[in-house]
Length: 420
Image 1 (tube, rainbow, N blue to C red):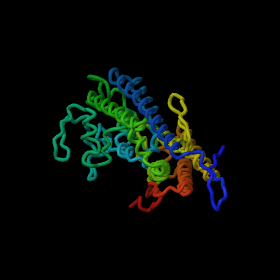
Image 2: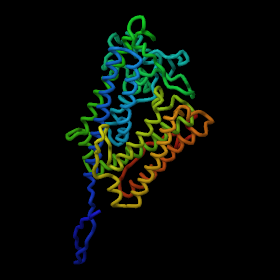
Image 3: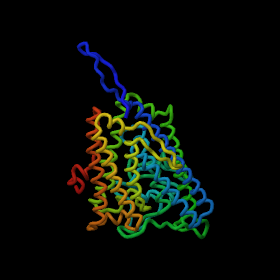
Image 4: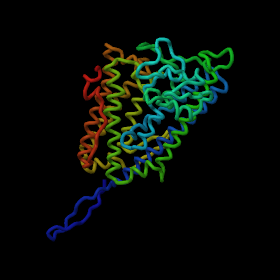
């Protein structure tokens, strides 16, 4: 890399000192460009999902349901890569729960198996079944749900009664409506909702097929509008891009906070280690579709994208520019090499989980107590994510960034608390 030099004087001597060839402002521009492209890809694939859902509702069939499932799976690929923009950007954190909140009490939305149970002390609406309930009382107020609309889902039902597991919107609500419950425990198989849950007349199974279709459409339309809004926040003139650029130091802190928090507390801890400790298939991120291996893989890829300053769009276009890696390399080349090596090791471990699941050993099977092979696969990912976070901490120190606090998890920081 060619370096420019600034001239300064000391004691009458002319001294050449290196000036950084990579400006922090340019790194922030790349980061925002990747965010804009990544959220736009999430929007594009959600629009494709919307079209598949509309086709399913217009002419229900096994093929139409499978097409909608395939579109949902494709939509998860770009979205999961955006999760690295959480934690460091308040505008994302304030919004994210609308689109990717989990786990959810699916009985709020639709019918569930009898083994699911009913209302609990923690959640009085865990088995409300809005699809079957055109009217109900919520927090002492009568709710008219005769028309299932995006507004009803977003403004009344989502996190109803202040309960976080009352997830009424976003990818996972749609996932449940497409797949249904996964009742296989640690056995093979995902949810198996029949296409006739959307059929008309006497062919309808599960009851209320018209209302189920209305809920699915409302949730999908809302997802598209939410993603349109977030994509707009990252383009030139958008609020997220503007907030990032208030000061260069603040922006670099946002990048590192997102990388470290997703890597450590969220993914290694809450999404992977916790589920393994509890041996609970309900703790997998995409639990209805058995797509968790992909969610973990693309979360990891999102972290790598941001560090390297490279993102491949769904149309194959490469978005790239000056990166955090470039910035670190100018300060400490050995540290940059270390981070890149650890990112590659983590992606290899997450790739093993992904390829093994695709070969038939699903993530919920890996979580089963006593399954040494599954535990080894998951812990390979957990350990890689933890190890790369330690290097992110070294990057924070090397760049002189202050006030970084990565998200933690009891599963990593206080394992004994998990079982209390």
